[in-house]
Amino acid sequence: MMLHSSQKLYPRFRLKKKNNGSQKIRYYKNSNRMRKISPVFPVCSCTISQWSAVGNHSTMTEASGCPVQLNEAPTNDLVYFHGLADLGDLHQELLQYVPLFCELFPRLGADGLTYSEMDQAIDLHTGGLHVTPHVTPKLPGSTTPDTSEAVTSVHLSGYCLESKIPSFFELWSRLFRAPCWSDVQRLITLILMSASGEWSANVIADSAHHFAMRRAAANLSASSRFQELWNGLEQGLLVKRIASRLGKTGVPADATVHQLTEKMIDIWRHISVPARLKFSLHGEPDGLKVGLDYLQQFVKQLTPLPLNPSPSRRVLAFDQLRSCSYFVMPYTVHYVAKALPAPAYDSSDYASYRVLSHLLTSKFLHREIREKGGAYGGRAITRPESMLLFSYRDPNALRTVNVFENALDWAETAEFPAQDVNEAKLAVFQELDKPVSAGSRGLTNFLLGISDELRQTQRTQLFKVEAPALRSAASQLLHSKIHGGCVILGPQDSTDWPREQTDQDPAWEKIVFTE
Image 1 (tube, rainbow, N blue to C red):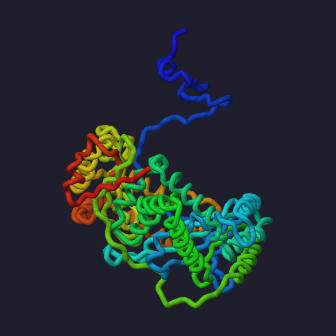
Image 2: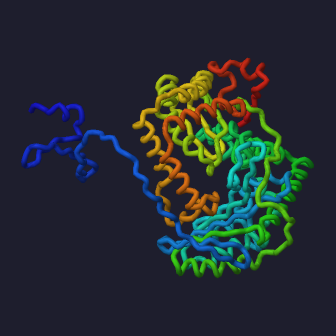
Image 3: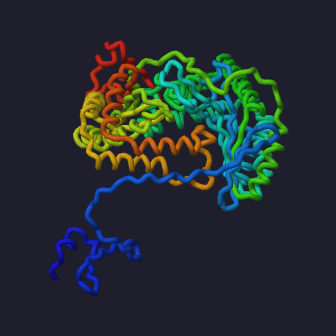
């Protein structure tokens, strides 16, 4: 039997004519069912209409003096809990230990229960109790890195069924009342597990380009500096140093445990003050009512302490890192990142930078880095206060660094056809208006300080972005690149990256990230 040409090339497709024989409709066989695929029509140009975003309606109340945001949503009898403990006045020397505290705190025994009993109770009654470091740029934003400020806090989160709310808050109360910091062996075990697990080179490789971006952006703003300190390679090096001391026996290890325990207790006492806490609850009306009642009981059990008059934000107070770094890792390829200053979220220029990053990715970086350079991928992304260009699994690091430089030159003189600009805008709108789960409604405001009004302002500014604004943004990036950073994660003896680049150039430093 003679086969149709399309059947030869695509054997899983078959063509079928409707009764009038005028239109071909494709069918695709997926498992044991047939799915109809609509006919393909010619691509038409379109105009982006100015539609309004749907806001997240929440109400504010209080629980024993602590602000509480209530978000009513159809959560299928689940209640979601979030809390922020302000770190704006935490002592400077304790800041680098905050991630380690967050790692240890919910995994200890507490208030008469061993760590294994706590773990069983958490699994039985909740979807988990999570504690993480949290930092956001201060809004309204600043235009200069020297005066940049960040809002720092510890983020508490978890969820449970409405019927488990009493047990859920009882577990949080046990942790805050009396965490078992005296279980030295448990502390040592968790730290050694962290050093050999999440901070191992093999685990880092899964998202090594993110680590490269955090390090490259560290000098651009206070929030970026905290991201590197808490979630970047700087934190990994700290954990590995502590683990190496704890792995030895004798007085040095005992002294390390004692000093570390004192720091953990100081941070625990700091976040346990009600005046530093605020909360957000998400659920259905009945669940919110019960949750608020038990949240009030939880807060009442905390020890109130007087606070020093201090703003709920932290000014950049760390020494700057070297602007260019090469991290020696046991890899055969490179992960390259370049960071440049960008406006704050509430700046009128921020929308232009977001659109420009999509155009750089689709019209220049993909072609130069992936198709010509052989890397697995590369792109540009814009975040508040930083624009980031990166590649991953890249065999040609030196070439990629030059591509990053050329990308801005290209953008400064590019024509940017209207069709390309509209497609980039749609990509940004896809990020801005992506669906939000019922349990996450209102979190953008609670965690990031971005209100519905500010989001709508951002959307309005996106509509106005045109080619001249994109070229202007590229020009600003070119003029500010002296303040940027460049970071590479790669092998010790890279045939692509010349050793003299890091050994002789004073702008570069080489750091060995041991396994």
